[in-house]
Length: 278
Image 1 (cartoon, helix red, strand yellow):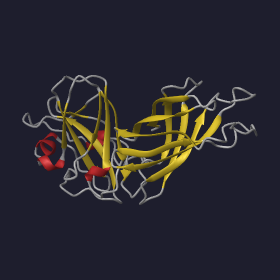
Image 2 (image 1 turned 120 degrees about the horizontal axis):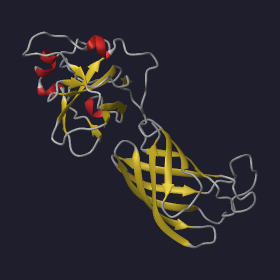
Image 3 (image 1 turned 90 degrees about the vertical axis):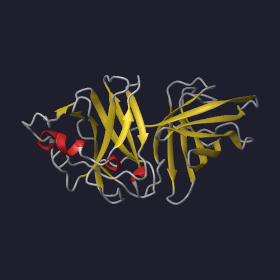
Image 4 (image 1 turned 90 degrees about the horizontal axis):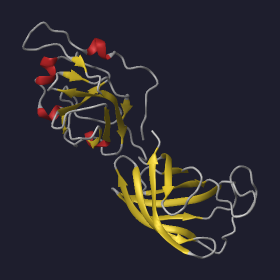
């Protein structure tokens, strides 16, 4: 779960960039092509593998090196060309650019912050992307405190491949810390089986998550419509309407193959995709 701090970071990037007249260590510049850099808490291991990084570029040359740096916000050093070029390889993570402008990575467990300290829960971190080829650096990411979390908690936008409804599904998931089980609700807009036809319907969702695998997935009936419409959803004889299994793609984005039947008993199959709202 992303946990953003509402206060601004202690120092702006302008203050963090070291200036230099040394030709062998020219001053860093801001990479304006690095549009957005975000970090996310995606695990509970108490090391750098708990951190997921998303980087959006305006443009980048294939093969260009990108170094992801984590800094402890309680003691941010002055960032300079000399400091960054002298970093140990354990203190940054390298991405080699492809033709894509979107990058998502889970940091390796043995990565340290730029001072060489281990990544730990309870500490505020932010990230930078350094581009050694152009001696430029991104703006600072959001500030993140690593903590023990049910990492899939949140609100998702979803789609059912076989069901044409007006608008996207709204899915809310909640899990208990230390448990691999999640449950919540799915809002299916415009799916009323009786007037008013455009009423949205709540259905229940549950699943088990182990690593990147989703099992025991089900969407079952709920008894009432949304939008203050007090009517029964007319499939009382069906237990699990849709069941299936699938996997987690990227950071809390899921695709699950499902099968089931509609209220008239006709079978169907396809998939549901779910993307967490940032």
